Amino acid sequence: MAIERYTLTSYKYPWTPHRRWPAYGPVQGEEGCLLFARPRDVWMEYVGQEKGIFFAEPSWDFVWPARGYKLAIWFEADGSFGGLYGDICMAPKVNRLTRRVDFLDLDLDVVVRGNGPPEVVDRDEFEERRQGYPASLAAFAEGALERLLGDIKAGVYPLDRPLDVWRQMLTATVARIAAGEFEGGGEA
Image (cartoon, rainbow, N blue to C red; front, side, top):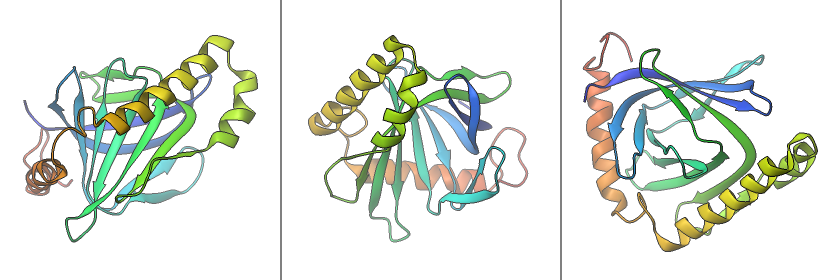
């Protein structure tokens, strides 16, 4: 499968653009998962605000059609595992023609830093915003959060693989991107 430059965009309910960033892929994973590589120093645009670096080191975005969350896994400059960031979201919309991945971010997030425990973050933001959610959407978000925490604890794909496998694959993919070996070529 050819590596192509995609734009990933998160939206807040009811589909208001929130963040936008470039990634390269897709790489086919298990369970219909698509992986998108982010090279070093990815600039993430906060819609209507200034851009800023979100990930200073290379990372993977794991996108599933039906898990209720997407994951980002990153590695530090020395190759060690940096952490995991899980976004609770509705099923991402992947458009291969326009090379876009759009998802509705439901405000709840989970962070794992290094070998630390999972931390639920943005709970206060979720509680504020849930008042404007339909009840079914708020319930979906709570259920997806429980699934994500359970999947992390159980080591469900992609966490069932040694992290070094993902680091090596990411390193090779980022090298291809840097060499212009993606659809359209040119500067990454």
